[in-house]
Amino acid sequence: AQSVTQLDSQVPVFEEAPVELRCNYSSSVSVYLFWYVQYPNQGLQLLLKYLSGSTLVKGINGFEAEFNKSQTSFHVRKPSVHISDTAEYFCAVALGGSYIPTFGRGTSLIVHP
Amino acid sequence: DGGITQSPKYLFRKEGQNVTLSCEQNLNHDAMYWYRQDPGQGLRLIYYSQIVNDFQKGDIAEGYSVSREKKESFPLTVTSAQKNPTAFYLCASSIGGFAEAFFGQGTRLTVV
Image 1 (cartoon, each protein chain N blue to C red):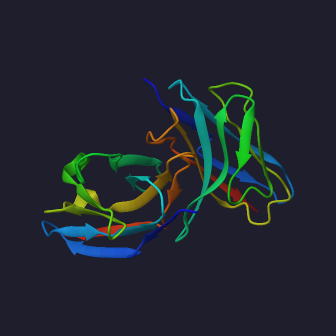
Image 2: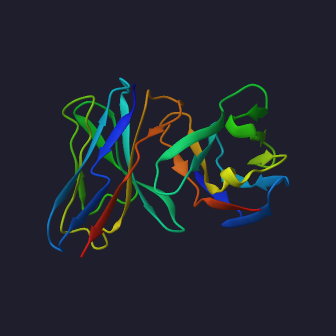
């Protein structure tokens, strides 16, 4: 079975500071990893994804993430956040085979001026 | 423009009534999903369908039903058997395989 753990439920940060949102997964087989962003009362949109190849992936809005197989992690980072980055961020994992995505509980990023 | 449309955006129902949430996509995706979102619990899978006329239960299917008669449509019925139906419901679709999911804007259901 696959599971996803987002280590922080809330991350407050000041504008223009760097941020890292953490995600760990548990699976013994190949996985596909995603980060989604959700603005209030809206659906989710894809931030970035790792399917294969380079372990460093770049996404929208200046975010990037690194896949670390040995640590089973897929943390996402941004070097300088903006007020508009305030949103809920979800990590998701899909196993090869069924591909049904399983989501973490979400991390609320709160950017203060 | 291609996308997923959920309707209505807000829905109010009395306890004991069944209610159907609509989800339509024009992305030509094979796979469609229904998730329930509650504060602090992330997204939990209710039902999914990987092909027309076939669907599977997710983690929290009790009290819900679906149909997949057309590729474009995957309606979700919240029945009176669902004990805590008030939630934000999200529909998603993907081309299948390891492709990312595309989400609708959600339906906020309130049962009073």
